[in-house]
Image 1 (cartoon, one colour):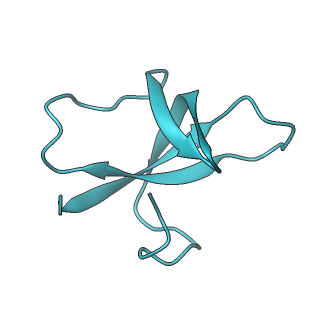
Image 2: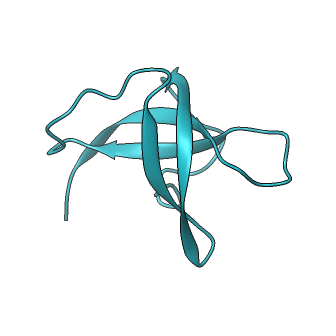
Length: 66
């Protein structure tokens, strides 16, 4: 199971006006920067979103973040 350390806020094309928090795997070989396009799980599908920024913490329990 990959380790995680960084939380990023991602905007996805959904009818919700909020960003969603996602974990970045430590074994990832790229730096995630604001403006980068990323593929994220969203419900039962995957969407392409845009990274808005990094966050040190999330209101969501780490066990529930993807």
